[in-house]
Length: 269
Image (cartoon, rainbow, N blue to C red; front, side, top):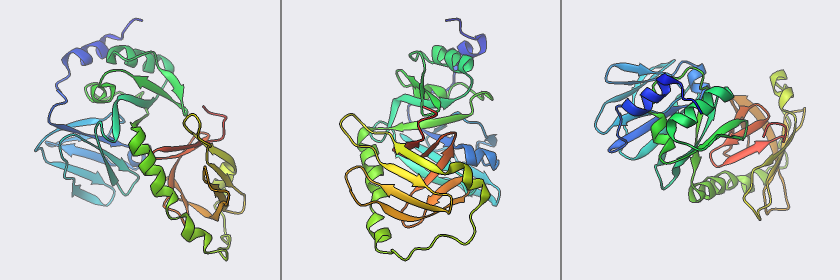
């Protein structure tokens, strides 16, 4: 596979080392809202991870103003939405460094995989999955690639289980409210989301299902629970929120996702 020269140069002469560093990733809604990260007087607003050396001051530039972000070594910080909410993950323990998902045109992603020393990319959840030694960290050495539209970290199995346990925890409270009524007005933009979604699941596991109806109601069926959770849903800050749970799902093409969880219609694998 021929490697585009500028990608090859970036891989060889990237200034980062990965030691004593942390990484910041802006999600799609955050970048759409023009949220940026400023480090050492330089602003970053691209999809690729930004490597930050230990002790460097970091600011988030948001629609409502500037605010400092305290970072620690060996962490990944996901900045989400126009409000620039931040979720932190520990490298290796909670986030895999050898696997990452990226969005972009196939030729660009294949060149990128070659430059990173990753395996040939595979389609995955509407994106491309790259796998190789420290592929997540090496992405931060590639500079700004406008054609890469999204970077999504991949949780370890342990972190994945913890995340799934968290989003199912509030379900009992939702069941205790059978009087929950459908909203009087349903955002017409949500009509395109109506349908049945099935979660990804490991071998031997039963997937969860999520049904969104045209009246703004949902039914969430956990893997091992015969009683579905019913409630209403709404869109906020680029995400789909399920009232009565702590789920806020990023809306993608044919999929809805949260940390450790991807619901898909099956049409965009």
